[in-house]
Length: 564
Image (cartoon, rainbow, N blue to C red; front, top):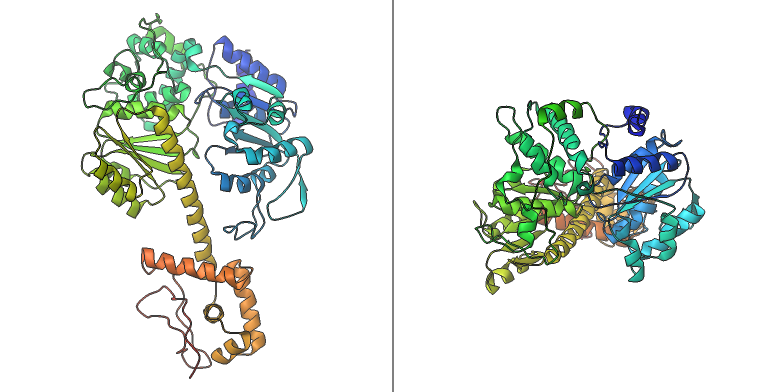
C-alpha cells in the first residue's frame, strides 16, 4: 500500500475532496507530511497559487493528534489591515469605532486545534510582532483589553511569495520567518508533475460528471496530449476549472479540448505579450513565459483512463471565502486570458459575456470587484457603473478600454471607478487596481455588517426605550425626560441604561453616531428598512410629542421639543 493510499484511508471520513497524484515530487511532499503531522512543529507550505496548499494543511491536521479539534483558516491577503487584527486576535466591545460587541479571533477559535494562515507573506508589518509573540509564548491580548489569554494552537502557514527576498527588502521580519520556517514543505507546480495531468483530468471528469449529471465516456488522446503540453500557470485550480467548463460544453459524451481554440501557446501568454486577438484585447508583460512547441506523447485514452478513474486522492478546490473578481467582456479570448491571470494571483474569477449575467448572479458575502470593458454588449460601461453603484455598492469597478479619451476616463473616475486602464497595459497595474478594489470592498462589507448590527440593536428597543433615546439625543436631562413622558426619573434611568446596553453605546456620543447612521441609511435607501412596532399609548393617551409618521414604518429618531 502506497503512502498516499494510507493517508487517504486515514483521513477519508473527514475529507470531502482528495489530493490526486502519482509523481515522485508529490509523493515526496506527502512523505514530509507524514513525518511532521504527529508533531506540533510549525509548518510552512511553499508553492505557487493553485498547487493545493490548503489541502496539504488539512492533511497535516487530519493526520495529527489534533484531528478531532478545530481546523481554522484565514487568508491574510483577503482581509484589509484595519480588520485583520480583529480577525486574528478578536476584540473587546468598543476597541474600534465599529466594535459594537465582544468578539473572539481565529487564534481562540483554533484553541487545541490547528490554525492555517494562507498567504502569510501578505501579513502587514505592524502585525508581524504580535504573531511572533504568539508563536513564542502562546499568549496574546485582545485589542481593547489588558487581559492575557493563553492558547494551545498548532500553526500552519502558506505563501507563494519569496519571503527571503521580502526580508532583504525590509517587508518581512527575519525572526518571524525563522519561527514559521520550522518545517518547510515545497509543493511542486503542475508543470513539474505532468504525469499527474491525465490522472487529475480523469478525476475531475468523474467528479463533475456526478455533480452536473452528465456522463463522459471518452477523453480523446489528442485532448490529453494538449493538457500535458500546456504550462498551467494556474496549476491544479486552472485545470479543474477548464475540465468543468469542458464538461458543460461537451456533446455525445466526448470531452472537448478547449485549449484547441487558441494557438499552442496559452491564451494567457498571448494576452500578456500584447499580441492582438482580433478585437484589440491585448495586455503586455515582458516576462511572459513561453510554452514548449512540441507535445510529449501520451498513452491511448482507452487504456489510461480506466486505471486513472480508480486512482484518487485529493484535488484542489476553490475556497468558498476567496475574494471574487468579476469580469464582463464579450470577447471570449479576453475573458479566458483574464480568468487564468486572476486564478494565478489567488483570487476567484467569474466571467460573463453580458452585463445582465453579472446582475443575475446572487450577491456573494466575500470581497468582490468588477473588471469591465467600457463598451460591453447590452450596457455601456458608464451605464453599467451607475447600475452597479446603485445595486451593488460593495463591488468597486475597474475599467479596461481598447481606446480611451480624457473626458470618458475623468467621468468614470468621478463616478467612483478604481482605475481606468487603456490597452495595452502592464499586468501589474491591473493587479494593483484589483487589490485596491478588493480592499475597498472588504471595508464596505465591514461597514455593512456594522450597520446591520446597529439596525438589529435599534429594532430590539421597545417603543418607550426609543422615546427615551430620542429625548436623550435632543439634550434633555433625565428629570426633563420624565416630565415629558409622565414617568419617574428612576424609570427614565432604567430605560436609558437598557438603551445604552442594547445599542452597545458607551456614551451619548456613541448614540448620536448610531442615530446619524440610521438617519443617513434611511435617506439613502428609503423607508421601510428600519421597521418598528406601532406607537403604544402613554398613560391612556397617544404620545403627541414624538413624531412617528404613519406613512412610514421607519422611525424618525426625532424628539419633539418641550411642552410650551
